[in-house]
Image (tube, rainbow, N blue to C red; front, side):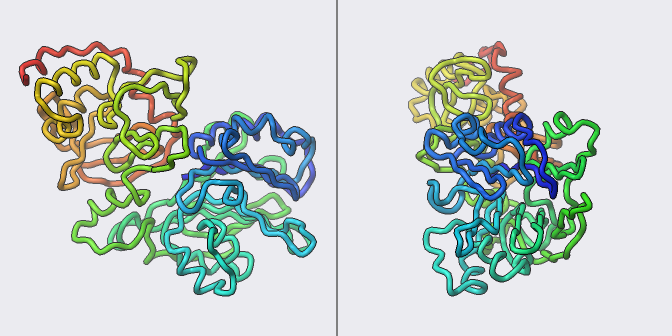
Length: 438
């Protein structure tokens, strides 16, 4: 998961600093490991204490000095392949013999078979240390775009190619199977855009596009796997369709239960494990919240974008977790701690014995059973197959469930996943029924 945004045009115009930086800050919710910007032949990256765009923007020489531009593109990286440093930050650029940038790519997604694709398309290039996005950029640059039919994973690409008489601007939003070739295709990553006054504006999160580009209609690319080009006439036209009927959005595994396989392989892990990150990461597999690769137990002060803070403040709350499960409040943790002591178990063992009880004390009452069904916890020891939508905290996916089984998914703003907590964190809990379990 990454965030991309920017504006593209064939005519120089005033740089909309407010719009660009607002979109960048909003896309921080999809990043957290590094960030970067490309503006008209120049690139600058933010890492370590500047890894969040919000912290990077004010110290960016490129952003502060730009008054007019043709192209301005930003990227917030959530690392899935490769190290976390300036050399792996995006936008990915390729320079010519004069050290001029002539090819630029930003990618939101993960390409799982990038090593195999590199051996096929660019065997002469040493890809050691490259990310999947860097490998795909070199394939595009040297061999073209047929590879779009061959990758496994999820991807949105925005590409700027300066090698012709005028720049070429390309957009791609893939659509493939979620976990096996027996289910319907679904979009791989979100991308929203609008065209106004001959300028293309885009973002992984579309919330603020209608704010800054008033009366412009907001679109998303359709699900037919078209590579599209933004032309100097101010239109988005289809270049070519690349079929992906036999491709999936995850690694290929042999399994006897495709439904469980999807959940177990989503994001290729039950959690993120960026030990250098100061963010809380939500798991789409089990609903737990992780910090430095481990389930959180106890309290942390966390912003609604998942950033761990030192002080409670606006949009930063003292959150309480039990073995990674976000609870309503401190009172719930204290009660569970006493119960755990009386029961003589570890916090993790307690969840194994009484998952419904712990989820009953969480704003997120959803439990995935060993058979893969999603159940709604209806009491401290009761649950039933769920029908409806739900999300896990600190994630950007909403799942549609019917009779406990996954029907579809869609993307949402990362911060929206915290609404169940924010709206219920002061809830008063009656522990009388639960005390009977002691």
